[in-house]
Length: 247
Ligand code: GLP
Image 1: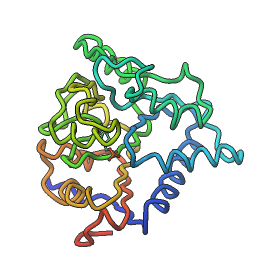
Image 2 (image 1 turned 180 degrees about the horizontal axis):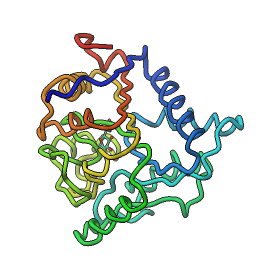
Image 3 (image 1 turned 45 degrees about the vertical axis):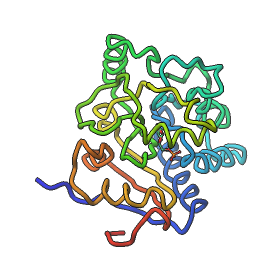
């Protein structure tokens, strides 16, 4: 059966997208104060996280009961390393929102298959994720679920594709500084999240956003599987939307 296109909100610009994303997350956390939340790093959700931090400063948001699950991490990178995605999530999300550090769960960064399976099992036993805040790679990856990734792939170690190494070079100044492997929460766990918020900004994402949301659901575009999520919300800015689909 064909999967219907999801609801897509097209915002004027990045700031509007960040505010709309913060509204959704804040509403969710108000209703579910002890939510288990998957947190992406990357550039796109940073405005949303800053918005949430402002709301906390104003006393409008209490995230102290939240448990954070780091979406992905470079293999073998220690938290103290400047490239650590855990470090990035701590600085941008956990600390500004006043979430206790003991409420933060990373993927097993050594990628040991038994540890990854145990991680997935523990999450499942706890009831799965409540909210996943996700970005999208220009090759359609979600976290580091590189194409091809089908809907059943578990948490695991992956080799980064050249396109991901190039895009991640923007974070660290040079492709040579990008680790070649990473551990990512698998599509299977992400797809069982109660709510999923996908954010995309800028013209570089336009083509992959269109393919992910309106093209065939395929392992070649891992983000296309998100359309099978229980409650997918998509926020894009005008630059990331080609206007040919439903809004
Ligand atoms: C990165 C990360 C993803 C992120 C995506 C988009 O490589 N592994 O978790 O969502 O690519 O990143 P950005 O928002 O910087 O474009």
